[in-house]
Amino acid sequence: MPKLKLHFQRFEFKYYLPKSKADKLIPALLNYLDWDPYIKELNTDFYQVNSLYFDNQTFGCYWDKESGLSDRKKLRLRYYNQLSNLNSPVFLEIKRKKDALVIKDRIYLQAANCLSHNLDESLFKLHRAQPDNDFLKEIIWFKKKNLLKPKLFISYKRKAFVGKLDKGFRVTFDYDIKTQSQDDFASKQNNLKEIYPEGVVLELKYNNVLPFWFQEIIQKYQLQRLAYSKYCNSLRQVRPWLDDNNYSLT
Image 1 (tube, rainbow, N blue to C red):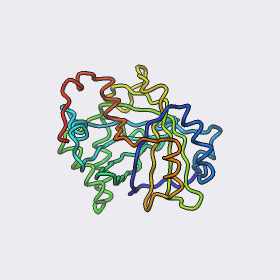
Image 2: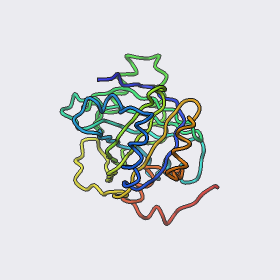
Image 3: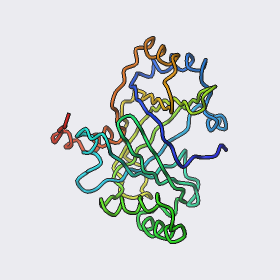
Image 4: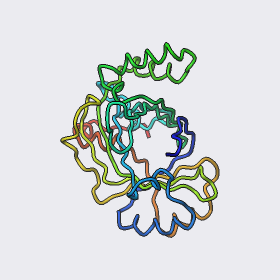
């Protein structure tokens, strides 16, 4: 298995398109991209991404995005495909957004440590073992200061590709996006609602200059950039009253 990174810093742009257009776009991209090495190890052309998002009682992280703040961050637990047992790997992540720049850091935990009654204790034990780990301090402070608790589970399938020449250039297609309210890592996903069943979210991720060939792809397939948040769009599906309180600073 390819080594999983714990730190990312890159530009990210999103495009929303119908599945029919995505099916036409992928063969064109394969002239310049390879399948993600992680997918090459699987028997399918996708992997499953599962995330449990944290927020406070008044959904401050949601409103930071909806109000147009350019500098914001979210806390989430993330694992890939299915958890086989309580020793399965899970990542606790902080994703920071500064305009188009995304900075993501994460730590590795076992699934058993992510249960709501275990998580804080597990973090403090890690902190005692790694007192100089500044990111671990940030997680503990961010979670405690903002009274963050699990609020929303999101799951989707992802087709992922990396540049043939520039391995830092990455394109992903996220689809079959499903969500439900969830207040504990151990909860079962029995009430999932599908978000945009006919749609795909294309995410473009890169570190340097956007290559000319991809600019041609954008023009040829008439891709339209959008400010799309899986968390915000999913949260509105399970808590529709949030739309009644919509506001923006822009």
